[in-house]
Length: 236
Image (cartoon, rainbow, N blue to C red; front, side, top):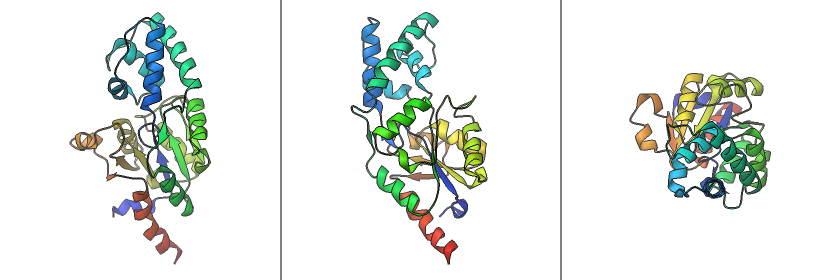
């Protein structure tokens, strides 16, 4: 067990690609937007590769079909309005929690550890999606990409979450599937945990010191399995 795990007082989670598989609905919204604008649809796998930096950036990437380019401002405004309107009304048509998500969250809650969501998704959408998936009540705090002046990979949301929860950020774990999650955790000074079932390639990310997580898991209950012995020891 990583020595840092002995001091964990809170666990924060990314949302898309960590708690739930939301690509089917994100891709459906992209298809509806492109159709309304008279543009050709993109495969779901392409949309998946564009997820992780918020819907504003996702719309730019879908419209330009390029991860690093921005669409014309007028086109983007039309696209963003279209995308948001469709997506708000279809948040969880196909989106589902990953297997063992609810089990893992319930186990962690049983330890008395506060849980948070730190996502780059708009806060209002994140809160509503978690409610629709039946997961919202597990969390003491939900931060979206528009909750603060900066979003991941900035460490600001992680530091803010730790402050709200009343703990030292070094005693928090950040669980996610992307480079944004890992970079933010390292910059904040907390433990980074990568998941193998999300959209990010943990094998690829682990090849670079800047994006190598401290710990890799294949399911959320693995966090409990490592924390539970320490919590029992603390209570003795």
